Image (cartoon, rainbow, N blue to C red; front, side):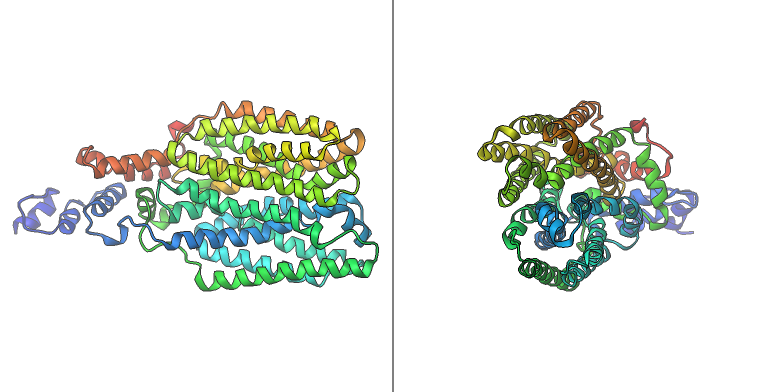
Length: 511
């Protein structure tokens, strides 16, 4: 028997043997080697550069991918608020009550809750491109259904169109962190996530601003129908263009992974991943469960404020529908600035918990100031306080996504984001209904104080979240191994720990 064959039997590798690195790794596997060792060798091959499919690389097209996602997210989120911001006009056109028009926004929240789990399962099984195609197709279909609904007796049809758009939102909301992780490097992933969220926020901003301009409060019903149809046709045209762009150019993932964490994740055999087991692991992760609760409280308050903004402004400033839209625009534009600043800050400092807690506390303070200044009779004061509220409350959105990914790595980013958004939708419905009833019976001040109480509770709970940054640890281990700071045995630790974590029923850091 040759020396090479003998070493295979004995489970030993002779370093003097004239064989390739690939053969050495194969020969090191005895018959009883575990899947952990196989994955360790794959990761070692990546570092040696022999397996070129796992080399780390960034592609310029990543910016186009995230901007395209941001654009179709914008088109969808615009429609969330396009009815609510001119609540009184649609009430008169369709002959329905204010609470019924509120449901045109709340249906976005209600639809998300039952559909998020099948959608995240589909994301795990089929990937980003299929999710993007379904999202833009559903959004496009909903816009064209609404085009046919511009008659006072066709409220059910416009509700159907809004339902289609709300279903598309389920395929959109959890995607920013997934796209950021799949396409972007570790030093820009939070910024990329912020850009993804930016599109959603910009869509809401346009939803606050444009409907009051395109649909003035005119008395003639035929003229009102004409203005509404113009708004619906413009939306349908944009949605159709974005659907075609996704069909033509949207790509599943880059040929080579952007980070060591992604390279490691790609090495996990598909049969070793269980969606159900992933959900159970997330629900046993105590820091993440606290984040789910606090994220839901904060974003649920934002949804309630956005849905009921027209009612609050009109109560204190009658006839100011246009300014109600501008105040909503101010909230979201300030929030977009806050999101980008927070994303850049996270990429530079990696201070996830500290930044999240600080922004949460400022959201509470902003809501408190807004509540007590709304009735002063000065619109410029409302613009100022609403802008401060939006900077922090809307700026919190990407923070929650990225903090969630850090706490739950290597679980699928879409699954963790989906659970965060599900919590936000549940609290959004509860807060919108409760605050609406409180406003009707006790006024806007009582309704806004109701939200302040829950923002304060969320701030306190955020302080108890353990900052266990798993993704950062994986990237640091990989970088240390590449720099030769760890021993050969430790270099495989990142991959081995990943497999052990997927296989184990729970993680000690989560209990």
